Length: 297
View 1 (cartoon, rainbow, N blue to C red):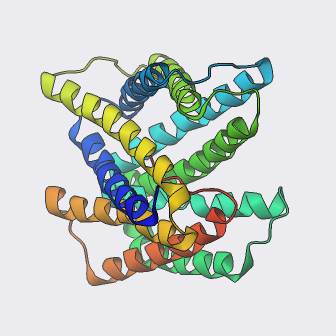
View 2: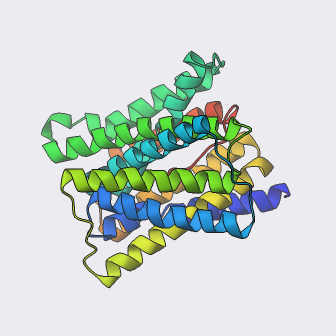
View 3: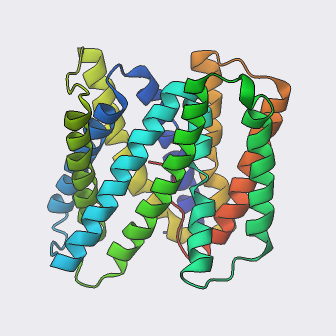
């Protein structure tokens, strides 16, 4: 694939996936139930693609444990992200979840002994200033639910970083599945864990209307397609350019929040969003030097 086609694919994948938090906001099912249906539908779609392509399917016991663990943290990530979307809105919840780049870079530095350089420190500081402008200035005046939404978004970022680390481990194993089936099985395992949480927490599996079913199906299929597009395009695009392009996802998610849900936003919050996205970009360059970036899916 040439560079121009890779850039176009990255742009389309990031734009497509930016609608994911909007769809979550539009559905009336609970956050864990939404995660279950998103993962179940997406997992079936990915596994179907793998079967049609006749990809390699083999899984050792150790590889299965890695895949199952990745599915667990993916389910935790989505459940927390969905809760954050409901409490602080699609735009800010997605920006919070994209802070996973800092956890990824920290893991690389501490565990893998990777050199992260000045971009990580500068990106972290810039993002923290941005988040303070958005949330910290009036933290004590925020409602308990809103504060929990912020915390849930940050916990989603940590969970997503853990998922990405385990996803990377599953890809590095020579006895693992091919790329598409690997992700498909991980997503289906995530659906299993999300379903268990729905049952244990007393949340309903019921989908109230045809509209909800439509939203959930579009959500599950769309995010799977977007992930495949992004994964295919990444090797053809320079690291720094890919990181910048993938910021289109949280940026558009914030714009959709303003347009579709009329989110009231003050000038200092716009500045905070700009700084947070800049910090995430600097952090993503650090991560991408060792790990290809993954958008919040």
